[in-house]
Image (cartoon, rainbow, N blue to C red):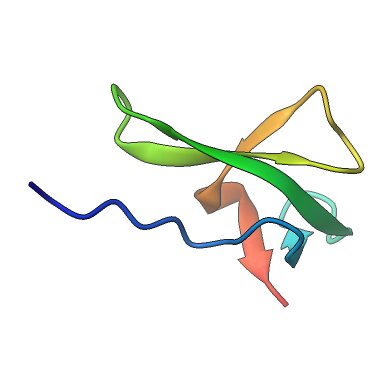
Length: 57
């Protein structure tokens, strides 16, 4: 079985690609049927984002 590894950690600061805004990861979860991680942000707790929508700082 493949080891699932998320790209970002909780409390890590990242940049939203769409707005160039710096945000903080509050939670991550693996979406098995899509085979990728989703993240919620402290600044936008009701919205989730995928790794493709974020950049490391």
